[in-house]
Amino acid sequence: MAVSLKAILFSLFALASCACLNSAQAQGTLRECAALRADSERLACYDSLAKSLDATDTQASQRQPETQPEDLIARHEISRPMTGGSLLGRAWQLDPGSKTGTFAIASYRPMYVLLAQHTNAINTMPSSPAPGRSAMSPTNSPTNYDATEAKFQISAKTKAWQNIVGSDVDLWLAYTQQSNWQLYNSSGSAPFRNTDYEPELILTLPINRDLLGMSWRMVNFGFSHQSNGRANPLSRSWNRLYARVGVERGNFTLMARPWWRVLEASSRDDNPDIGKYMGNGDVLTVYRTGEHVVSALARYSFSGHRGGFEADWAFPISGPLKGYVRTFNGYGENLIDYNHRQTTLGIGVAISTW
Image (cartoon, rainbow, N blue to C red; front, side, top):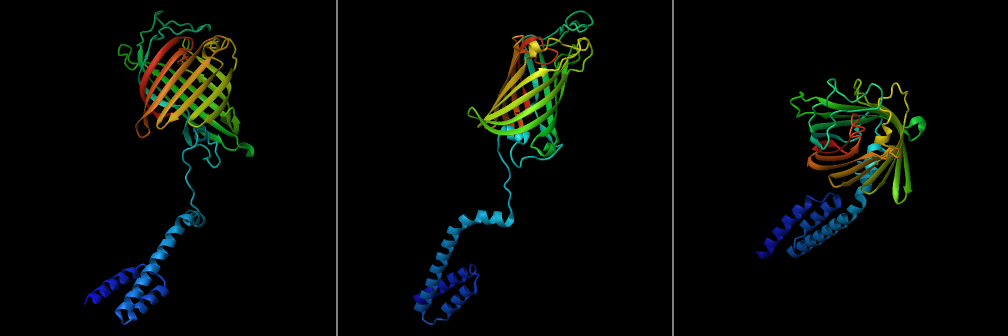
């Protein structure tokens, strides 16, 4: 009776194994085992069949990791999505296969809202040495501005021409707007103290060379017009031609941008001394660690020995929304303050960073 019970158990095992067998040879082997009359011979046949199945499964599992990825790519043409990459590579589509065509909107400079920005010296009487652009208000007295205000910046770019004349050079259009808003100035009906508008044309040339232990990724050649759209005496504007070099190493990015101001007739120049305060160029450094982005930008004038320095920190809050802290010291926090020295500290949120 005990032998018969073992035979039944092995028969059940054989039936379960049958679901995993696909070949006609395996089915024939099962029939041959079942046809044996002696219990001992039938059990030995089932035992031999089970061992052969285990050996087959082991060999298949050992072969699968070696062949599966290549077979999938060859048979199904799987394209792995591009992830990660460098800051400059993503921002300017410098890497092979990264170009997405024309007129897709992308971020340019950080887009943020500072819910509160405090200055140690609010500019109540903006000035310029240009004729008709003196600093006084209509009542010939300082404007009643609050030292704490809101500030926001929007900035985007789009590619207008990709692979110019068969080359790797791309033409971009960019636009940046920043506003200082006296949001908490109830006595003045919360006016906008200043808004700067800056459209740009940018040619981007990809470069992949080693430079002093860093990777030289690209050169930009650009034209920038920046103005605040105000009437005299508060009108401010200037035009620049610039070259920008971008290098990287790991999570560190550096961009250096010297510029040349396009000279204007004295009768139309809103701010003839702007170069002495805003500088001859700027240097931007960016460091990313996880979801945190720390950046610093410095400007300096070799003729006026003045400039400005700003530092920013973006940290994660929820999804693409980041906390944003910004500090500035020097001249040129905006165009109306191009020749006004101050120190500011602001806190808010950002939806895009460097």
